[in-house]
Image (cartoon, rainbow, N blue to C red):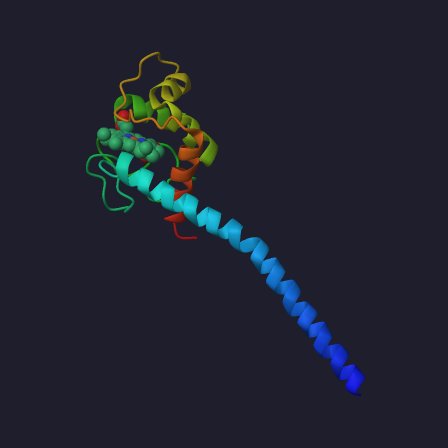
Amino acid sequence: MMCALGLEAFRSSVDRTFRAIVMLLFIPVAAHAAADVEVGRSLFNKACSGCHSLSPDENYYAPNLYCVIDRPVASAPFERYTEDFRAFGATGLAWDSGTLSTFLSNPVAFVAKKIERPAPAILMRVAIESETDRQKVIEYLVSRCPD
Ligand code: HEC
């Protein structure tokens, strides 16, 4: 009896230790992702938020970027999309993290290719050179979209 109890206790302590180890393995991954989102937030605040809001109701200087991933291009209730950006939207493309990253590396070149016009007159001309920075901004945008 003593022995059986002891074994139970031993098992549950092994279980607990195992769970603790598994948790410790995951904490750095979660912390790393949270840190990326924080960097993304600060990049967004510096480079994008002057024009873009993350609220679906705010579309003054630029279309809102609320839940922009999975959204069709040029589909926000923004009245001043340029003609070339509307033509880009008419290609039927929707944003995903891959297209958004390529777009942000050089918006004019990306749209030029999509609408087959060499120098599109679009108003979105801000590029982010570093691919990892683009990923962080995208992670931040995703983190601000409710599930
Ligand atoms: C100077 C103002 C300005 C800044 C800064 C700016 N944008 Fe834009 N952005 C615009 C405008 C205006 C449009 C609409 C383009 C058009 O109609 O030609 C746009 C369009 C976009 C679109 C397409 C939205 C849609 O509805 O399809 C995305 C995505 C975007 N911007 C992301 C960003 C990100 C990310 C940043 C920061 C790195 C940024 N923009 C910085 C003005 C800006």
